[in-house]
Length: 143
Length: 436
Image (cartoon, rainbow over all chains, first blue to last red; front, side, top):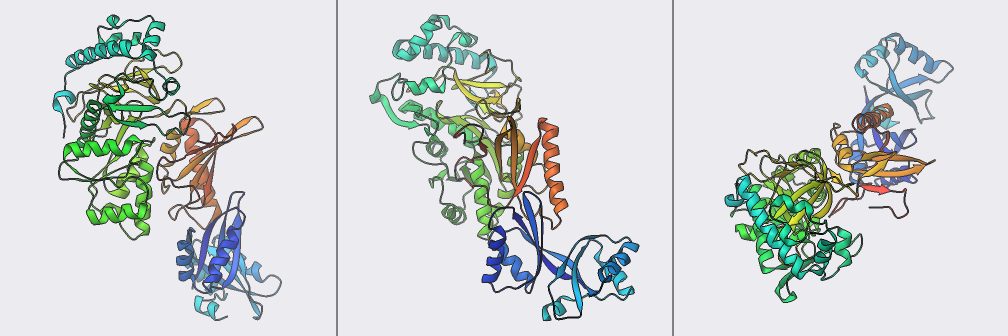
């Protein structure tokens, strides 16, 4: 089960991030999780929103370069070693996690981590085999 | 197609003979009627009777743009003002404008060489020419206009700018030929796509692009995006406007209309004439002009000449597409760099669109060249390292070709200003107000 993430190119210039959030807020699109990776010149904003397809259309019409990236939302036990176990399982089978970030959700007993993995299908099989739950897009939206 | 086979396919001995005769007449007129040239010839110790063959041209003095400015407005007139029927000037963005005054005969020659130009790219009587060069003092608009009229094609004198209207006209009137600057053609293509039009399907078959430097890779982009044959044309206000040289359908160098404009290539430092095939500054003499003839004008354009036969059948000398300007040349840490070389390299990288800008800074006494390239969907990745790899790849390609270290920076789409006329590619911050 994979989830749609929106990736947006941003120049490292004053006000660019605010422009993205303003654009989405005008369209009543809610940002559920966010991560920003950057270099000295530019950054890539990665967000999970409640309406991914609409977000891409809106951002493109405002002149941003934006695309949908398929990611995996993994349930992590909210205790020491919870995340560690998942990474070990993936590592054992040589599945590389390109990047990851936490999903903001307080009222559940498990935390959710968004993972960008090249070999997504295989990663999902491995997680399932090891009894690690992933969250579907619908389930995520319902949270 | 060849408009005037008598001259365009003239064999070389006959061409030289014709040129010598015209040059003799020109020098005679200039010596008698234009004090500016009489003085220059006296200083060079050369008299009209010294010019017997075309090779004697090397004895004559050069003319520079600055000299032409000094005698503004009428100092180059070789006929009486009442014989002048039209006046154009250069833009004057870099100083006093240069004046080009045309007699009725000059306008006739202009129409002739522009008819040759448009014909060489396949334009005929049945074509609809959308002329998006500016009409006015700028020579581009009226030059194309006169040539298209001479052929008997239909001209739409829409002039430059007003992109939405250009697209509407192109669609409604089914234009088959487009004339504008190369950068504006890509801007039109981009705007067309935004309007939901496929610019390669509007029915354009040929485009005549000039007035600014462009590269072979940019030609590829234009041809692909607009679905037409992109013809490079060359001209300058100081000589006549467009019509000095043009490519034919084979796109292998620009045929110089040398029965009217005699080309030479010189070493810009010494003024010595260079042999064919060697790169240098293009110098042009107007052999037939009556209003404001020019002797050995230093164009500051860098190119080379090729006199080998062309597959199209024309025998006229061909100049390579302009490689750069003697005054646009950037000197980065002592290395000569032409913006056209950089364009050639970056446009070869998969996915890059021709929207880029060069910024030169001096930091700690060292020149730094930053190449800004616009991000687009094809280049984008959600992973930083892929983006950095793109930057590094361009830097490595530039180093391999130019042997200089550059810093490539990906910027957001549309952050580089679009132009409706000549694209502004260089921002040189090393000298105050050094922006071109």
